[in-house]
Length: 334
Image (cartoon, rainbow, N blue to C red; front, side, top):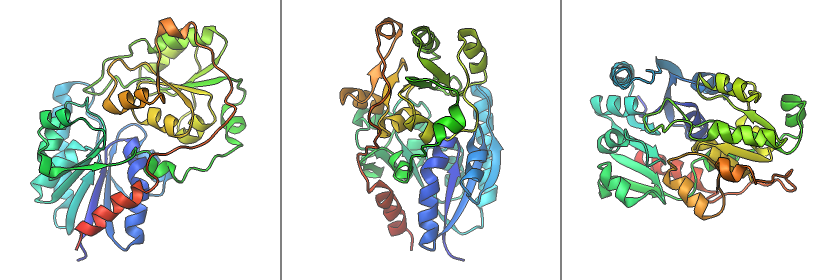
């Protein structure tokens, strides 16, 4: 049996990141086995992108005890699934279930990670044989999470470049999906309230209320179950789901986020980006230093002036990132 790579998808950003890597590996004749957790848009997105995968396991909820139980339950199910399938390498973007299952099955385990505020890095960085982190990931955080220097591999660029390199703007998108709308158009996505690192909403909804009061067209992409109630309270329309996130960001005039994947996508797609996240990760902090993300709170939102974008362009830090990541995997396999 030909050696296989196993990739586990635990949330929707991981689907976007791994989909082109999976296609490139398969294009080189490498056997790839994919599993996906039923959480948020993970499974529907994997289907929409045409991935051949096995749905396995569900979201464990916000409660820490239930999260731990769900992790162990899914890890055991993944272990039973991958056993005997000729898997040589287990890949994930900090899928804790898959990392644990991979070690249980005696596989070589690699993880990718680009956020230093996740407490569960303690588990992932200690169990993984190789830890791939973005080049600016703080050394202090690697030491704190138990990632020994010999297992750390740094990559240049943002992981979102792996798939946004293929982005092609669709001029019909705004009228087809957002109509009626006015400019400047402000798209917002709340911070996660279900993650271990969550600090709540901060001033997110109050900021949106101020922007809406100034006459801007503000739309929210729902992330948490309770977002709908907040949106109704502030009179802010929710965007339809599922929706093409990169197209949405590209055709918006500003993005207000709580850090994370969509914030970095907006940066790469040239949109003006604001963060209300009270505990920004290292990437957000670095992009703020570079002037690509602006801090936004209720106080400066009152004086903020937004305009329709005059120029729309895609930027990047490392156009070869996908080839570099795929090359490392191919080089490891026999």
